[in-house]
Amino acid sequence: MSTPEKLYEGKAKIIYATDDPEILLAYFKDDATAFNAQKRGTIRGKGEINTAISSHLFQQLEAQGVPTHYIDCPAPNEMRVKRVNIVPVEVIVRNIAAGSLCKQTGIAVGTVIEPPIVEFCYKNDELGDPLLTHERLLLMKLATPKQLEQITQLSLLINQLLSDFFNECGITLVDFKLEFGMTSDGQLVLADEISPDTCRLWDQSETDPDRRVLDKDRFRRDLGNVESAYQQVLKRVLEHTPN
Ligand code: CDP
Image 1 (cartoon, rainbow, N blue to C red):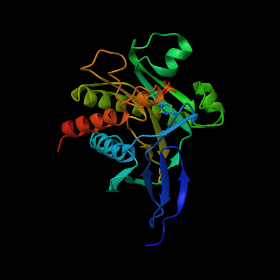
Image 2: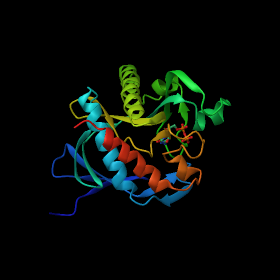
Image 3: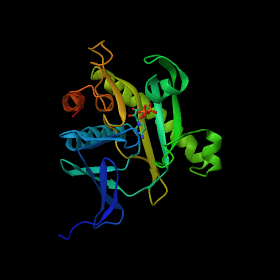
C-alpha cells in the first residue's frame, strides 16, 4: 500500500487520507500540550488510551441516537472517521465549575452548575480560542442559527448520556469540550474525540481536590501519575461498557 497522504497534523492527532474520499484516518499521538501549546510533553500510552476511550464512548452515543463521525478502529492508535467539514467552534458543556470559568468569573471551583451550561469558543489558536457570544458567533458566520440550535440540543443530550455513564463508573463528568462537523450529505455529526484530554473527570471515591483528578489537569498542573489516571479511566469505561 502507498504511504497515506497526511492532511493535517494537530496537537494530539494526525489526520490521513484513505482510498475512500469520504473516510479519513485519525492517528492519536502521545504528545500532550496545554495552555495553547505553551506547555508541551508526552503522556506514555495516551494515544492508544484515548483511541480506546473515544471509540467506546462514540459507539455508546451512536447506539443512543447521537450521530458521530466514528467508523471503527483498525489499529490501537487509529480511528477511521467520516470526512466532515469541522464547524470552527469548540463547544464546552459545564456541570461543575472549574478551569477558565472560575478564572474568568471568580465562581469557586466545585460549584454545581444546574442546569448545565453550554459555551462556545472560536477554534483559533492564534487568537487563543476566545469565548464567543451567540451574536458574535452568528456575526462571524461560524454556524447558521439552525446549526447552533442543533449543536446546543445535541451537546445537552450528550452531556446527559455521558454524565449518566461516567456516574456508573464512579466518575463525575465536570466539564468537557465537543466539536461538530458536517458530512458531505449535510448531516451534523459529533466529531473529534472524547477523552481525558477533552473532559474534566473526578474520581468519586476521592475527596482530595488533587487526588480525585483523572484527566489532563494532572498534566496541566504537574500533579503526577498522569498515565495511571488515563489508564484508570479506560479500565472503568471498559468495565462499564455494555456488550
Ligand atoms: O482547560 P481550560 O481551563 O483552559 O479551559 P476550560 O474552558 O475550563 O475547559 C473546559 C473543558 O474543555 C475542559 O475539560 C478542557 O479539558 C476542555 N477543553 C479542550 O478539550 N480543548 C480546549 N481547547 C479547551 C478546553
